[in-house]
Image: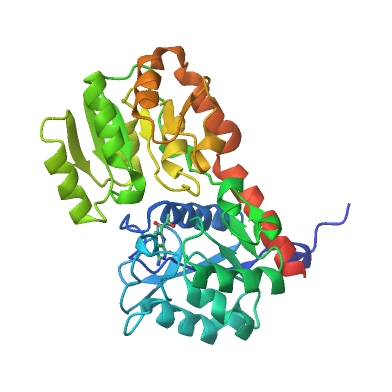
Length: 365
Ligand code: HBI
């Protein structure tokens, strides 16, 4: 058989420009789940032979992937906005500066991939020559933002990707977006068979994550709750501390993946208490990867991840009693099943396959 020509591999190798979330440097944890997705995907696509360049705010760090740091004012978190909140761009916006830089270098790339959950990249899309894939990381929040996403979804079908079906269903363009799920470098997560006597809660400490419900549940079963993640709403955190002076919880802080999985793996269960439609819930697959069952409200991404009674429990949304019931039955769950689900559905290879198919379709058009 003739050796495969370099043009064959040329056609498969993509030059990809990843544009980061503008809420803070990559690696800081401020970008939450989408930060993890971008970092994992950059690593996986590089290993597959694609050329990946990441553009992010100053201070962004990635291992083994080239990153162009752009200065400017971070974008405010959008999840505090309401349906009628106007589009906000600060003075010297890092988002604007990132996209100005992207405009200048776009001809060096086959595809640009936007990871910002923000209006500007969508508004700019028709002014770029290079195709742009938008991976959106949250459910619908404001009307003005929905409008511009919808315009792009209609003009450029299948260029918007989401984590889960329930996240997609919050948007008017639900039937023309691509469901991509998430994935992890499972080699970083170690299976723990015998847990210690504590529960875990992981995430950005902010109202939409309803940490107070997990604390209330831990108090009722009197099992210590360890809290991991960045405080992104200080006022909310102080209110919790005032309202639960005697509850058995301790705030552990924000850890990188390797440190987090070691502590998370030793807990009896992860509690997930999203007050909003959690787009995915990367922490759910991090827990499963360590063999930790997940007890989650039946809402958003976690409801599509947890296999009820098999790798955890799905409880009635906002029901503390439901969380308590799940905790009291946690011994029914075989921890090995949790690790096996992560390997089957959420490996970097599974993630890379889904994104690579999406990218190939967008580049071919
Ligand atoms: N807010 N404005 C804005 N832009 C983002 O990209 C963004 C955000 N808030 C949270 C966030 N991204 C991520 O933590 C979630 O998408 C996971």
